[in-house]
Length: 543
Image (cartoon, rainbow, N blue to C red; front, side, top):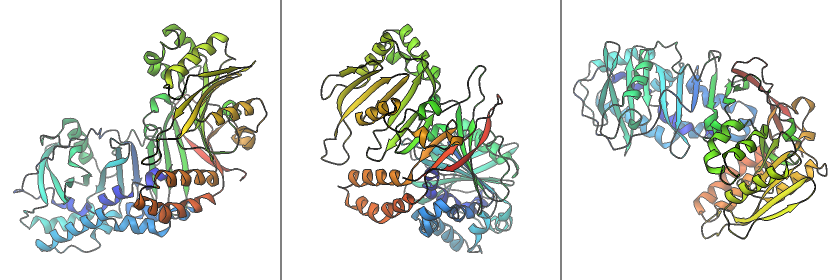
């Protein structure tokens, strides 16, 4: 999961190297006006998708590299890339040019000195789901001497422009735009002890060039705080202060790719680390009256052993039913029958990926409160027939005493250009109390065998301490093989990307494959309050 954070190093690197430019925020009177480029980003500044809190932001890449797993996966190239990517170099060049043209005696190590301070980096997803937009909050204290130098210079620069003003208490604060590349600009604002940098003007300014009211309120609130206050108290609630290390928090909506409303009991994941330590936590919502504590044991018993990776899905079936009711109540026989169907779902679900499969063909397993009646089985079959588009033929149904299976031919998305997409057989089954689904019918057949005790299951491979409280399992050797095959086949017609896989991805995956298999285990608290729960990484037997 941390890979989703490390992959955003360009974002953080682009921010940290321009911190010193905040010194101008209170000294400018005759600026060129920023011209809006028409972009208006739909970003809620009060609610970031991920948050980094660091005692020393400049140390974050090397401290991450000190962790055994990431030391093998990232090596020194990660730090080099973080410090020498194009955005960072472009911004450093802009900073040097401004200092040179205005004869400012700023030390070369100014940025590094500024970054050796507490900082908060908030990140938001773009329209493709990547954590691309960010805000950076820093202390301005180390810049006081530089501010005095800048105050004596009449600045009027082609790359620095006035984008607008904010009211912070009784003060009027200038918001500056720094254009550091074609169609690339940052916003900066500074007041008292606070310096704020936004990664794109559209986070604060609409397409007409006006400052957005809600965004202005958020930035003004950050600038009004003292340097010891947390800018995002809701995201960081109940977390210890960051005194000598780093804290990374990722919201459940980001981790679940936007489907967090189906998993309301899972709120966030947190990683605390320094040069010599690493800890993992999950935040679980308050347990509702009469609600059972999550228990993954029943679904682990239905999942075939040999998975590359598995994840427990703490689904709220009532919420899921509300989301799907309008679409699926018709195929299920009407609203009343659909409500009855949803009421039969019980406990958590789970998903597993297997080495011989594809990323697009996982196996899903859920459990019913009791073995399904013939009427319930018929309703579920209708839902399957409605939800899987007809492609290669009609639905084929087989039934035995305790198992009912529906299959339909389908076509997967093409892996590469001029590829029609592989044929597959999508399968849905009821086996005893379990509901099984996969775009790869072989996995459903294997799950049925596991339920009937003809094939080993995941539950049997877990240590006793992990059987009811495991959140996920990871077998690096199998997972690396699956990802490598998928990447090579998908990008085989893209020479540049294919070379990148050979030179960059494959060596990393080879190292990842040598890591031990693990289960992530968390024991839910018995108290009816939301809480951060420690996650233990338990070694599994390698295959």
